[in-house]
Amino acid sequence: MDTFAFIIHPIDPKRDVSRKFPLLGRVLNERQIDFFSTFFPPVFISEIEGITSQATGKEIKGWFIACPYTPRRMLELPERTVYRKIIQTGHMAEKLGAQILGLGAFTSVVGDAGVTIANALEVPVTTGDSYTVTVAVESIREASRVMEIPLGGATAAVVGATGAIGRVCAELLAEDVERLYLVGRRQEALEELRDRLRGRARAELIVSTSMDVLAHAQLILTVTSAIHDVIRPEHLQPGSVVCDVARPRDVSAMVAAARDDILVIDGGMVDVPGSVDFHFNFGFPPGKAYACMAETIALALEGRFEDYTLGKHLTRERVDEIGAMAKKHGFRLSGFRSFEREVTPQHIEIVRRNAQHARSLRMVYS
Ligand SMILES: NC(=O)c1ccc[n+]([C@@H]2O[C@H](COP(=O)([O-])OP(=O)(O)OC[C@H]3O[C@@H](n4cnc5c(N)ncnc54)[C@H](OP(=O)(O)O)[C@@H]3O)[C@@H](O)[C@H]2O)c1
Image 1: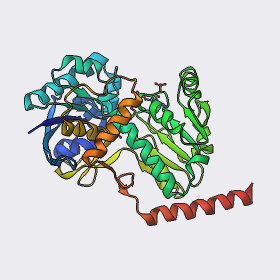
Image 2: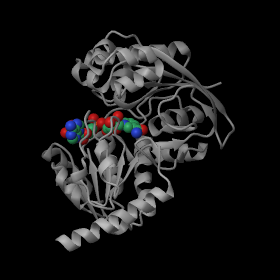
Image 3: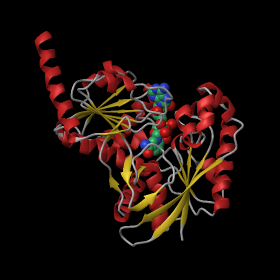
C-alpha cells in the first residue's frame, strides 16, 4: 500500500500540546512549553487510514508526526536549528516507510520553504502550498456567491500578498474582481508584484502597507506568516468576507466577538475522499483536512512520489495541476467554518441582515 507522512506542530501551545499530552498541557504555561519544546524530540502522533481515491479506488495509509516547535520558537531560533529539527522529524517519516512527506503550517514557511529540508532527506517533500492557493481562492469565490457579492464588480484585498501563497492568490483574484488591494509590509516588493501582474490583471491594482485600506474591501483573503493577529474589528466594513488561510490566524478573535456583520471563514479546509480516520484531533470535524495535508495525500493517491511544491515561488501550472488532481481523486471544498465552528445558512443570513442594518445606520449618521 502506498504511504505518506505529514508533519504537524503545536500552533496554540497549551491547546495543541494538551491534545497529545494532557498533563503537560495542564501544568506548563505557554512560555514554558515554548522553551521546553526546544529539547523535545520529534513525536509520533498517529496512523491515518481509510483514504480512498474516488477515481481509482486506490487506498493509502499515512502518519502524522510532530515537530515540537511552536511558530514563535521557529522564528526565534537560528534557521539551521529549526531545519535540523524538521529534518530529524523527516527521518522519522522515512523510518516509518513514507513515500512522500508534507510540511504543515510553519514547517513550510521557515527559511527557503522546504528546499533545504528536501535536499537533506531521501523521501520526496511538498509544502502543500499549491493546493492551499487553489482552495483559498475557491473559498473566497464561493463565499462571495453565498454573500451575494458579485465577484466581477467586487473590491478585494490580499493581505500577505508578497508571500509564497499570497502572491499566486493575488494573481488569480486579479483575474476575477474589479479592484484588488495588495497589502503587505514592504512597499517595494508590493510594487514589484503589482507591475508583474499589471499586464494580465483584469482588476485595478492598488498597493498598500496599511491595514486601513481593508475598510474599502468586500472580499479579503489573508495569508501572512505573522504570529499575532493583524486584522482587527475596526479594519473591516459591514458585510465583508474574510478568508483566513494563515496558521496562526491573522484575524483577531475580537472580530468574531464584536462584529456580527462580517463573515470570517477558515481558509483551506477540504473533505477527504473515503472514510478517513486520522486517529488524532487537530481541530477539524471528522473527514476534513487542511489543503496542505490534502496536497500530500493527493500526490500519494496519484503515485507522484517526487518533490512537488518547494520554495517561495509557486507556479500557476502546479496550482492548476494539483487542483485538477485533487478534484479527480474526490477532494472537495468543505462547508465553511469560522473560528472552529460550522457556518450554517442561518449564520450567513444573520450576517447579511446585520450588515444591511449597519450600512443603513452609517448612512443616517454620515
Ligand atoms: N490553511 C492551510 O492549509 C495552510 C497551508 C500552508 C500554509 N498556511 C499558512 O499560510 C501562511 C503563509 O504562508 P507562506 O508560505 O505564504 O508564508 P511566506 O511566504 O513567509 O509569506 C508570508 C507573508 O506574510 C507577511 N508577513 C509576515 N509577518 C507579517 C506581519 N507581522 N504583518 C503583516 N504581514 C506579515 C510577509 O511579508 P514580507 O514579504 O514583508 O515578509 C509575507 O507577505 C502561514 O501562516 C502558514 O502557516 C496555511
